[in-house]
Length: 276
Image (cartoon, rainbow, N blue to C red):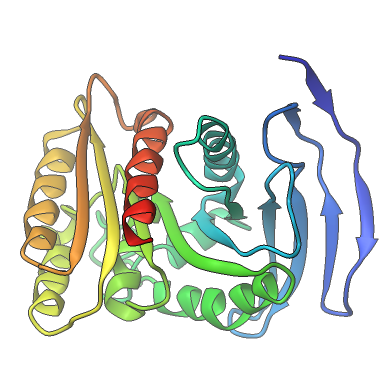
């Protein structure tokens, strides 16, 4: 397939944000080039960035499902590419991907961990996470920004490893903010499974629904596999949640997300078709 290299173009957008069409390599049938946005977050009190991948034949008169992916610099590109390939195969609808990159290593440690968990699970003196504030930023600033420009038919939230903690926490903190959630190689076992216990209590008291896709690599650690199994059992206790739980053959922590994303999207496509 012929590859196209696109240059960088900077476009003024508002006083609070700018758009940049970023360099990426893509195929003729892939998504459009990434649009880089920058905005100041009043919630987080810092500048934040995001990358937006539109369908190759984006139509401004249509509404699209929007995937919000943490670790957006690394997870956003394969997600957008796989979504485009599966759409071309007639398996899933077209969608928009919004990648939310980590501005610093400290951001990732803080933003993606729930407030009842330590940022460094190996250090008893480590500060608690700030995923509640990070979700406020997504809900009150990023989503309105994106949906003010692109019409959304539904929202999905995706995270790998530590990012999956924020995704699962979002179901407890803001259950109706997303219709679908993808947790890939997520360390649910940390701190004696406190996130699993928190979700278990929430499951017994809330009626919000969601599509879930959980995956873990067959060759990940025993802690990872056990946490995956326990979280799967906890979610299965609900009658209003569609859960797809997958153990990726031969995958390790470093490649499970890349291998399992297509499977998750196929399951999501079946879910979307079933709702129509």
